[in-house]
Length: 174
Ligand code: IMP
Ligand code: MG
Image (cartoon, rainbow, N blue to C red; front, top):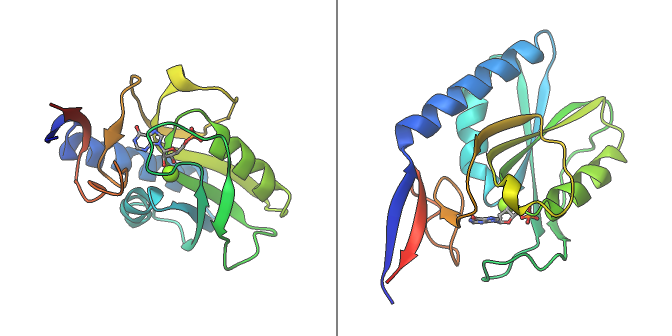
């Protein structure tokens, strides 16, 4: 089965939005240091681009959770596959995600990270699919709200492919 990718958000649109979010975070955290927590693998492309555009001091850490297999539907099961290297105690933490879909992964993750005693904890996602929400999650920084379509690129995969696309696209099977 051949797959075609239809562009939903161009590279220019995504880059411009990341620049805006970077400027906003730099303002909001003026005089502080931010600790970015990347949710692997999807959040990695967004975090690198965002971090380059933040002008206050930045430190980084990574964690990996799984709620999806090779399917395009959430299993509702969240497992920590790789935990953070550093404690969060006293840090101004921003969790960086590729997309908030059902909200299951993030609601679980944010609660767990809150228990580690950060000075502050916020959530930043490149994409949000509000129509798909099952569990309520408060998002502090959103790149784009998108309709209920399965998207790839900029870190997002379809069966581990297409993460490297520099834009957001929709997979079309024909
Ligand atoms: P949630 O727990 O349903 O909010 O799922 C969040 C995770 O599901 C994201 O971090 C992605 O890894 C994955 N996901 C949700 N929607 C999409 C999509 O449209 N394309 C690719 N991955 C998706
Ligand atoms: Mg993800």
